[in-house]
Image (cartoon, rainbow, N blue to C red; front, side, top):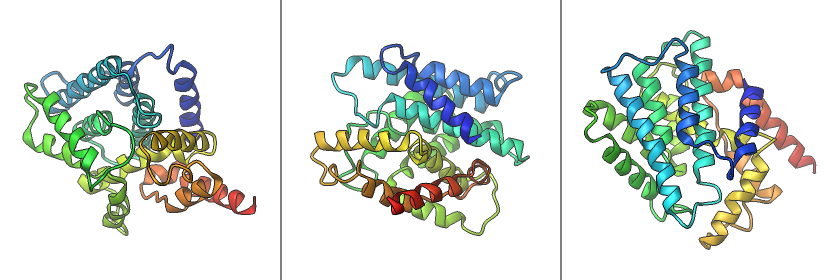
Length: 265
């Protein structure tokens, strides 16, 4: 699964940005992979969540087309990376015969599609600053789609808990708990998807460089560190992977090998 993900990252980058197919194409590919026999029944809550995700994907393309600045890291390519990651993580869970309802699968696709919408680049000035903006935008997109308030609130919470300062606490909440699809485990899955590309040895270093460039434009105090080998070592050392899907990917071992290599350099 990890090699499939890395191959997909290569395919995404081969078209970025000049021949970019667009987030709707990436999202539709994820939907087809998760529902190979066809999407959830029309009128179902899962279909409503997927419709909101499609609207968000199109909205992000419109925002990018109308903008003179798209962040070096927190851009549509990052969203595509994370969408592909959450898709393959969920597919791994299904292959391991964990129960994953259509509603939760669709909600995670919507949350990932939305989690960095309107991201201005840089880092939060206070907890959930950018995530609150993204959650609000998701709620606007969902208006008029008859989405159940329970699912709107769940997706909003998933977005809010992608704040990097909350990730460790999200993992702590599921520590020593068996996997079952609920809000806490969904938060861990979206956190894992959010950084999966950066955790790979193939694309992680260049993504660190992209983040350094983004932070430099915003005068972030750590822009001179994040793209260096020491910055990468600190990043990798901070990572946690808790889901059975990440275990099947072999992420802990993959990260440990990189840490060992960096410490020897």
